[in-house]
Amino acid sequence: MKISTPLPSSDYNIWLKPSLKPSYLPAEDIVVCRDSKARIVSRFCDWIWDFRVYVNSTKATGKINFNREIYRTNLGLLLDVKHLLWIAINTHQSNSGEYSVSSYIRWHSVLLSMSSYCVEKAITLETILSSKAIFNDFLRFKCHKTQTANAITLLRILHSVNRNITGCLIVEPSHKDHRTNEDDDFYQTLVIPSRILFHCINKVKKSVDEFVSHAERLEKVVLLLASPRSTEDFRNLIQSNSLEKLAEDHNIKNATNLSTYLSMIQFCSKTMIHIYSGMRRDEGYSLLPGCFRKEVIDDDEGYWIHGITTKIAGYRKKTAWVTSYEIAPAMQAAEKIYSWINSLCSLPNDAPLFSNTSHFSFSISHKRTIADHNDHKLANLTHHRFNHIFSGPEFLITNQDYEEIRFIEYSRNWEQEKRFIPGNLWHFTTHQFRRSLAYYGIDSGLISYSALHSQLKHIRMQMTVHYTKGGAAANSFFEGASIHFRHEYSKTKSIVNGLDYVKNIQLSEERLHGGHGLHVEKNIKPIGKTEILLNRQITVKQVESGLIAYKRRATGGCVSPTPCHRHLISPLSACTTCKDGAVIPSLLASATETYIRFMETLEPGSPEHIMAQLELNKAITLSKKLNIGS
Image (cartoon, rainbow, N blue to C red; front, side, top):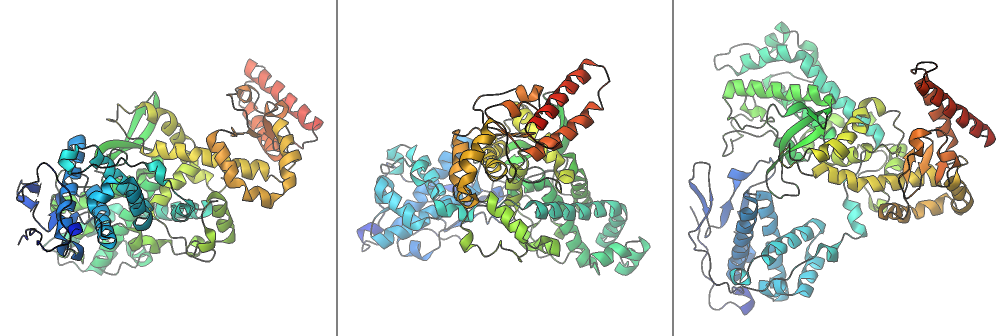
């Protein structure tokens, strides 16, 4: 039963009456949303606006609920809120052509907070919207970081609309006035320590590979259990298909446990995709079967995942992510489970790759989970549900992990940290993989890659090349692929370079050589490590702003503000004699060994071999002159 919004009583105080005076108001019976069959779901007058038909997320409710105490007792505010929200929704949709339900819900949350502020301060919504000072006070006292951004976005949309439609003059907000303060970094998603990330990759990869090796026999069990006429005993099915070891290892004692195991494999597959692509949580849910493809872009062969994003554009938009062949088994596992579900349930053509295992009749949640408006059930693959698989001792935070992450997240308030401390299990979230990919994808030597190299080699080389070169040039091919990850990569690159400069140059325990190396030895190292660490935020900001132009080199680093190609011609000796170079003896020795192995691949007596031998001789002479061991 639908409940209409009653008109406000005449005895309300002035600030509780509608404060907006538009040239016209929406009709109460105007349709807000229809379902996939064009049936009316919600009207303007309803207490609930239901947009679930457009939702593709496991966590989003898809509903805007106006049935709240503050609205019931201040109906003038309710009319103002509905009017503004309706304008924002229509303006956004006319610009994008798409629905963005999560945005609508966030905008209503902002308007709800504004309503609370109105009652508290005895002011109207018009007063907040038309006064920059009062709007800023509202943000300061009522909004956290994320809601501040949402409030500014909402006002920008409303500001773009004619005042005769909104019913008042609306100020133009600016993100500059509300930049993040020092406390924002306390809530920043953390980069995963390299050791823990290594074990995470190994864990999910091992689970996926194990599933793929048993998939053919598991398929027989699943299809028999899901058959309506099946009378097979579960234990007999497991034994007859030689799955006793798998069942024992994963505690699969009955059909319900099997359904949970299949969900866990979906989670591991999705985690692998996030690790090797950088996509967000809901972007992973947008994937369809067949989304993983091998393609040639800019004459370079690579692997891509096609899906949907709402990042940047604010609405559902086709895009593609660069990835690695490492995820091939994960995609195979996910598509295998999808095919089983589809063969039993005849899913719609647009059913997501990660459909819910509750489609199986033997799942305990088969009757509990209701299909959405698109007639399919989306998998619930949250970290809250599956983080228990990362509960082994290898996922306990060590002192070394703690120091590593504290160095990376230098501006976080670690004195207040209670979760990510030594002795605790690392708590994974999807966005951590995105930030970690950005950090570890930059080949800057931030962290020793000895343990990660075998697993992350594609992240460091192939994927980096695509994101910075091929991906940027392939936008038109991928129907306007968003800058979703290249933006994160670019934003992180200068931070990583700054941290690398502090760690490997300023804090180097070896005696540096080269022009800049001698400068660091003479003017920076004498102030002491404590002072260098205290000033690292300033140093990183200087690198970000270009005041320090630091780049990693094979033998150390370079601070030249202009492009330099000498290191390409003379990779061992160039920085040693350069005023902008900083040579680290151990890196020079390592680079020399690598160079010698490279020379062995060249034909003796060839021009290439002769030039390489001259460079090697020059490097050895310089090393002896500077008393650097080789």
